[in-house]
Amino acid sequence: MTYARIAGTGSALPERVISNAELAAKVDTSDEWIAERTGIRQRHIAAEGQTTGDLAFAAATAALQAAGVDASEIDLIVVGTTTPDLVFPSTACLVQHRLGANGCAAFDVNAACSGFIYALTVANQFIRAGTAKTALVIGAETLSRFLDWSDRATCVLFGDGAGAVVLKAADEPGILSSHIHADGGYKELLWNPVGISAGFKDEPNHGLRVIMQGRDVFKVAVKTLDRVVEETLEANNLDRHQLDWLIPHQANLRIIEATAKRLDMPMDRVIVTVDKHANTSAASVPLALDYAVRSGKVQRGQLLLLEAFGGGFTWGSALLRY
Ligand code: ACO
Image (cartoon, helix red, strand yellow):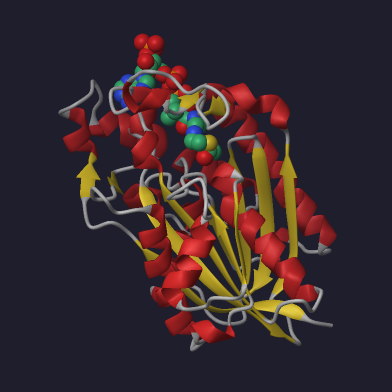
């Protein structure tokens, strides 16, 4: 049996950090309000001209170095993003060329905040099927580009960044299972109303912005993550106490704590980066994973549960032995 194993991780964050206090000078909010409701203290914001592809490239380079893998060995690049540099070529193609991995398959996956879990799932299938031996999986975003910076209900929640993993075919797990789902019926609880073939407006930023019914998103996210976590445990015949680490999507500390409670996991076994990164959408899980690996928290052989929930709605999980 062939499995996909994480050979290396990497991440990248823009230099510019915006604290809650700095935001509070621009919109009617406060550090207390943001921290109490979300756990967020600051976010990194891309510099002018710095793109999703730039962050993805930096994260990928770090992951390849950590894995000891040369770009020429890559068979597949999958990038989870909702904020691609261009409509086309895909961000995956742009990154591929910069890495010098020309010739391998490369494409983007748009599943909003679940983008990395979706991308990981796709790459895992390629490796399990024997059609790729080495895959680069990236989650990268510059959500700051389409936030409405005058809307306090949304602009305080998000940040920019990228995370990446190199997957290699191995005889031992690796990724044990992944589960991805979507329900497009929830479109209007969390969406951006502008695209290429619909919604373009003759107004600043073409009308691009995040529209969110925060309270409803919160409720559905908690319930749905509970379900996908149960699904993962059942599929692997696993007791929740066997997990070493929960590496959740970093949107809101209260959502993270609810999932940890469901798993009966103390918070010191949960990777939390939302305070420093805010919600970086598809980048949030691989950023948290890279932080967990590089800080020495996550060790080889440990059992990790990754999960995410986001616009669509989309959601998913991956259980893996690191
Ligand atoms: N600063 C100060 N006050 C604010 C702010 C702000 N930044 N934003 C909203 N408020 C006000 C509202 O206007 C409202 O005022 P009112 O009572 O006078 O009308 C009050 O605060 C309460 O607003 P709610 O939206 O009901 O606040 P809530 O407790 O639900 O917290 C939040 C809002 C943090 C967005 C929460 O609903 C949440 O986290 N939801 C999940 C959404 C999420 O994480 N989305 C990210 C994408 S999806 C995902 O990744 C899971």
